[in-house]
Image (tube, rainbow, N blue to C red; front, side, top):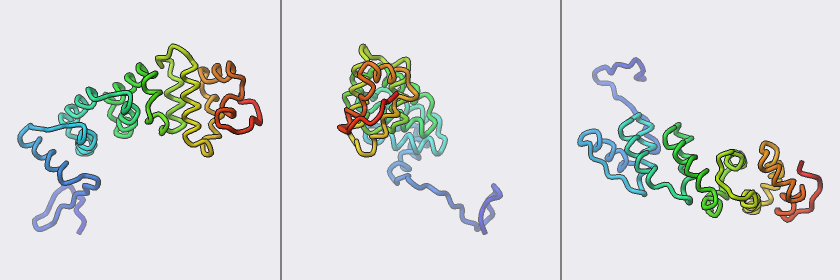
Length: 191
């Protein structure tokens, strides 16, 4: 008999789906609940936050978020941003977003930016708070992103559509900049 009434009857087994939660993570969650003690490091912080978020352990979440905020770097901020967004973790999302925008020159030089989706790249590069001294770096970042997977990203020429910043950069680079960067023949104007 499925248990769904909210009350457990004597002799019935309670089943709880704990997919994607390892025994180590569960052990740490339980230790935290009983002792208030928690050991977080860079290897387990994301996994612990995901588990704490899943079980709605708010205090545990705050501890993990605090740790991850202190660990933000140009190399990991976009990944943390995506994870925080997926978990609806607003505080961490806002912190990672602010860090990524403020540190754009450093983030642009990292491997992580080459793996973001087109939508996330456009959103990031189009943000008015993006800290860049020159639009040339924005241009170079788009070019590197396209070259990472030029066959699949050739349609990237429409990267300029939602973004005034990218349109201006495209105009200043001769309208066919994305086609040229992807090493394909320019067929039509981008704009």
